[in-house]
Amino acid sequence: MSVPTYIGTLYEDLAGVAWRIQRLPAVLTLVVWADECGNVYASEAGAAPGVEPNAFIGNYCPMRTVDAIEEDLRAALRERARGTITDVDAQAGGVPRYG
Image 1 (cartoon, rainbow, N blue to C red):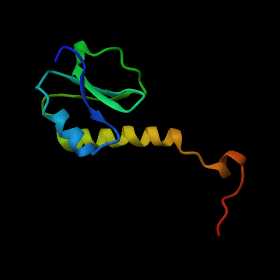
Image 2: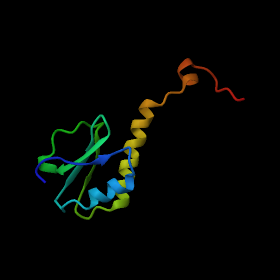
Image 3: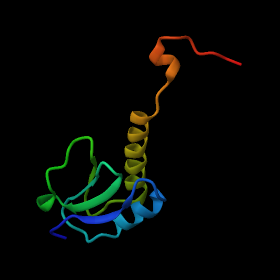
Image 4: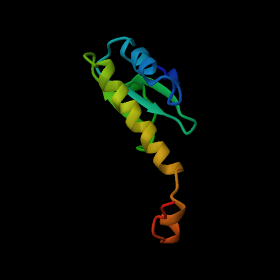
């Protein structure tokens, strides 16, 4: 796995993406990141391209678990969503309105 491997996207079943990452060859350290479109890639740490901090999802050792990977994928997806969801009232400095 000397070149980045496409795994899937942050917008599909994350349990399936985590499972595919977990099934990758057991290397010393696996680096996982997502590009600006949400495409998820993995590579051996020594072969990973320079990954921007906002694209980084996690480093995983050979004993990586599907649950831990899925949790990191969900955190990355939440972080992306936080950047796209805006609260119009908060931007205007208003008080929340209730029906």
